[in-house]
Image (tube, rainbow, N blue to C red; front, top):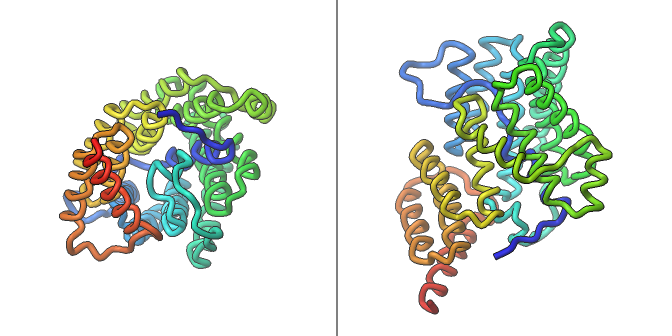
Length: 332
């Protein structure tokens, strides 16, 4: 079935799932000792919904290498995603316009908010300095773009100021586009560029004209191809690209493709219970009601004894998915 998104909501999507730096996530064979190992540990914890532990790992990365802007950027990202989680934005439904707000936007935790700004200020200042010293280095452009991407995401999601996010979003887009020009092998830089291009192409003609005046270009097919390339290419943002594809494939009604990505991520991050909720919601869109019911039942079994914090309204989401699957399955 077709999905209609408001321009503001769809623009918010452009960066929400597309950002990360560092190294690929994975379990460490030994206790971390280097900044790269701490980054890897933090990413693995974050993708498994262990947000506080992830932030501590990135703090350890900063302590191990205080000069590297990637460490600050990842710490800012961990603080930001914790704030988004606390506002209840947890599944594709939130970005396809299918969920309704039950009240005013909650204010972010003051400590997390302050930490985000502290980390991001360091990430921007250090990456900007690297870029001034190495203006033809693709990695320097990439680091600057990632830092401004987090600023755009924070402004659009935590603050709800979507149009105020266009300035830093434009900087992120331009810097990653420049990184691709300097080094065409940088498939990771194609994630933000591709997502923006796909997003702009989905807007109305007047909105596309405004976006082009703001410095963005749109192409649905080319944009999607860039995101898919980033998801296939082993890199710093491969996992983020895969999460992004869940969103895009659902929007395109490519439910089998979305479910294949979800299954891969479930195997890699088994403590991320929201992947099973995503599977249930995707199966509901595909009208596979028994599969949706089974996904919720599997998640409930896995969640037994899991006392980690739930997002606001999360338990109701699980129950709603189960009830819809059960009722629709009976009718059909």
